[in-house]
Amino acid sequence: MIFLSAMVAIVMVSCTGSKKKTENEAYVKDSTDAIGLVSKAASMFGKIADKMPGSENDTPELVSLGTKLFSDVSMSENNSESCNTCHMLDAGKYGVDNKPTSPGVKGQNGTRNSPTVLDAGFQFVQFWDGRATNLKEQAKGPVLNPIEMGMPDEKFVVKKIGSIAEYKDLFAKAYPGQPDPITYDNIANAIAAFERTLITHNRFDDFVKGDWKVLSTDERKGLETFINTGCIACHLTPLLGGHMYQKMGLVHPYANTKDLGRYDVTKNEQDKYLFKVPMLRNIAETYPYFHDGAVESLDTSIVQMAWMQLGKQYTPDETASVKAFFGALTDVSRK
Image 1: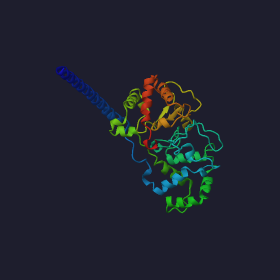
Image 2: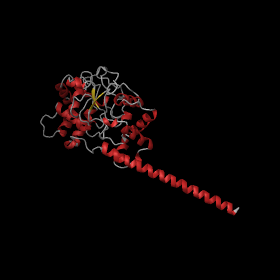
Image 3: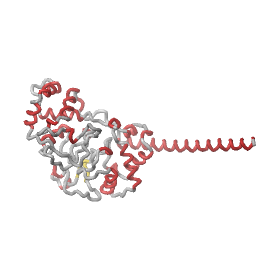
Image 4: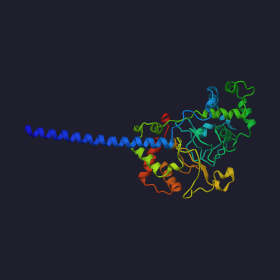
């Protein structure tokens, strides 16, 4: 009996040791593969900057003014809309209103989806069709748009904002030395200064900086699918997009052929159906998708984009893995 018990103990120790060896080998392989993926991702996408372009001269007073203007419904003709109405930063939102297209001052909806304002200043142009080159220029557009905020002209905006006592002091502090600081240009500049502070941080940022454990096995698998199936042809940089134009329906046509995209700006035939490639940061939270907000489901958008842009029919497993990876692109400070 003593001999038999000893043999059983030896076998158990041997099995335990073998199991631990197998687990250790699997861990080493997994970590080695993950570290290799970190290196690949870092070289492909890069790391997001700590500060947004143009923020070098932004003062706390200027940002404070822009913060107030961004959320002030006085910026609309009938005091019903603010920048924050369509690009919501409160109520757990991620810089969008999660509507296909946004209603304006008269309840009439625009024709394009309102994209997130988070990280927007890192993009190479603004608006889906690139008609604004920077945040300041972009901020001037919606205020005067008859559907969106409905102000009749720049002078009306300046007069209305100038009639609010609190703003006289805020503008004087934000633009010291200017005898008449309440101008339309200064209004837009202040809003842009605030928007330049909207830099997000997600787990993928930590991954490309070297923390391979921060992504799950499924998320890393999704990143590999994203890379290997060709999504990176358009979705590169730390934003995973926002750096180029691309035709919507490159391989297979998109259903909506009414919106001609950048063609409306350039009148160049080659620009028909070209749109700015959207950023994928916070993509899981910024539904619905595409320039017209036509797709509510992230799964559906992944499948459609693979088919329209790459000519690939994603399997359910590929779709699920890419979706898992997209979850790692959500700003951790807003969860």
